[in-house]
Amino acid sequence: MAEKQAAAQRKLEAEKKAAAQRKLEAEKKAAAQKKAEAEKKAAAQRKLEAEKKAAAQKKAEAEKKAAAQRKLEAEKKAAAQKKAEAEKKAAAQRKLEAEKKAAAQKKAEAEKKAAAQKKAEAEKKAATQRKLEAEKKAAAQRKLEAEKKAAAQKKAEADKKAATQRKLEAEKKAAAQRKLEAEKKAAAQKKAEAEKKAAAQKKAEAEKKAATQRKLEAEKKAAAQRKLEAEKKAAAQKKAEADKKAATQRKLEAEKQAAAQKKAEAEKKAAAQRKLEVDKQAAAQKKAESEKKAAAQRKLEADKKAAAQRKLEADKKAAAQRKLEVDKQAAAQRKLEVDKKAAAQKKAEAEKKAAAQRKLEADKKAAAQKKAVAKKKTEPLNKVALVKRAKTVSEQKREGRIELFKVSLYLDTGKVLGLVGIGVFAASVLMTTMVFFLR
Image (spheres, rainbow, N blue to C red):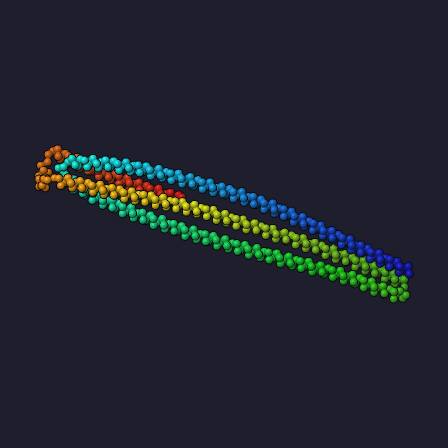
């Protein structure tokens, strides 16, 4: 009876010890779980602060870069404006000087022509010869003016047509470029959205799968625990009934042997249980760490990808903005040049037309004057021919001087026409060079 009581006492102590061991392990596990959660939360907090700091740094750098870009564009625009104003001022100065020179030239020619007219009126004997030569000269001059005017008209039409063609080609090219950039931007946006959606889908599936796995393991663990406790309880009940039934039949040695056997089995079972719990805890800890590491890796990759996407979009937007500003400025510059050229062309045509009108009026006046002088003359043509044959030395010298004056007049006219042609050629070269550099 004493041995039975001692065996029951040892059994009770073993069960108390096992319960205390399980409680201690459960407390250790809960403490480790809390510590892991606290560390995870602290790591997430540190990561969030680092990301905020990095985002603020990137934003500050982007704003600084944008400010520098705006400043550079403003300086370029101001420099271009100053250059355009200087060139406009220089062109106006050159135009004023050319007009002054042309006015002086016209004045000199008018004075020469008036002197020649006075001299021609004074020499009445050579009126018929001068009239014939003047008519020939006027016809040649009108022919030259007509040819010059037709050539200038053809050149102006050709320049206008070429400018229109260049403008049309530039607009087509710019439209095609804008369309291509819009398509590229839309394709990149669609691709980024698809990748983002796929990443989110993968992340949700992985989290769902991990949650399902954790839930399944927890249910398995709880079921195993309940089953183990039920088996322990049933075994204890059966053992108690067997002990009671066989108490009278077993001897002291059998009771000692049975007690020793039970103790050994209980210790073995408890050791196996502890080992199983330790293995499960270690496996759960490894799994949690691997999941945490994988989640951090995925988040880092997603952040890197999102940052790259934002940077790419910002670069594309800034490039498109710069190109649009350059195109606008170039278009305004081309329009200004075309307007200036058209105004200069209209002014030149008006001046040419006015000069032709003045020349025509002067020719009409000279012809009427010569005709009046010829009508006043009453001598017959044969007498004029006789007088020509009977010229004196002074008359021959006078005719030589007249011929020399005519040659000098022709040479002066050629010089003026040459200077005008050189000026037109220089102006066309200057405009072509300005258009090339401004583009």
